[in-house]
Length: 530
Image (tube, rainbow, N blue to C red; front, side):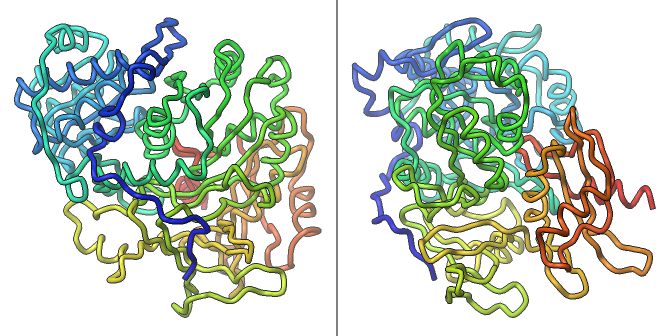
């Protein structure tokens, strides 16, 4: 078993609202909490708290209470913070939808989560309204923040200036948010996260992540995803930093916002790191205010991290987590410079983990001559681990063992210096003639090729029915690379059993909103072609 290098921190027995806003000082109330680049409007912490209270009060008089589940379909705009925390202020639960969902996907999640209210914005209303009607949710329970005929809007609700009721919840057991797991390896499931889960993870993250009230954070990763919800939104609010919101990623807009608003801290996913490392347009902008870049949601290879950091003169760090762990379990501590850029760092305070051999089930504890353990499935235990999957006791029992360890399905190694590196997913390991081949290792290697812009590797069957590694490659704009180049580049750098044995050039790699490669889409493509 592995322990955090940090002493345990005290987890306050508070609701999310009380943790973030109950002790708001007069000085902090004047600080800027949110900046909307589209309008230039700045919202102070004092104004945000008042809006949260007024929104909670308006919902309360309409019957929303601690037993209500509210669906939130909204991009990164300042109003997200108001309605998200307004719902939690009442003790109601929030289930967040991916902004790219179709009406059928929204409908499925509404029904599974038991949501009776939907909050959205005008551009997303058609899908939300269709799903709501199918699920029997009336129009007056569909709030359109920026206004739409026949629906309540945010301005109207806030103008009522309702005082919210006093609500007491058991922070350890009361459902706060119900995000859905990505579904990249199976059917999406509602992840039950309590107030304590969310409070604990912010309090734990404060130890490793050096975010301060003087920082301006560019919030481009979606708040509806647990990474954006905890590490961008809640951590930034707890630290009294300023959030510059972006509804969607566009590289030029991203760079413009950094330059115009003087952003200092970037939370990103690996595709943005690749752009920072390789895209020529980056040189056209002054982003010298950025001092730190924190990458999560998917593994970032060390070469890309190093190239991005050197190019923009900022420190690049990684973290690791899952929806089921609120999400952060590991992060590179800001006070250490001895940890490789390819590592996800050390365990957060109050967190334990095991590495378990996926074949034998034996716990891995020994370090090899190179200072690393053998690779094993990562099991996590800590106050950030979910309560369970909604209405899925068997799935919960499969995921969390009797000792309270969550089985992540990710394969990792630990270095004797205390840092961890994610190698791959248990279910995504390629078995080539009995040898385990981690796709992420080959992807990280290929991203170092100057003529490759992006890549994904999966296992496919050859003519003899044997699984082999296949690379889907996006050539760089000015690159000139062939399939033989790709295979030779890898063959020169890995053991023979890890070689790429098939290459297909594509225009883009399918990825989730959080940057994870959608290997199931590539497998489906492969199946359709065969």
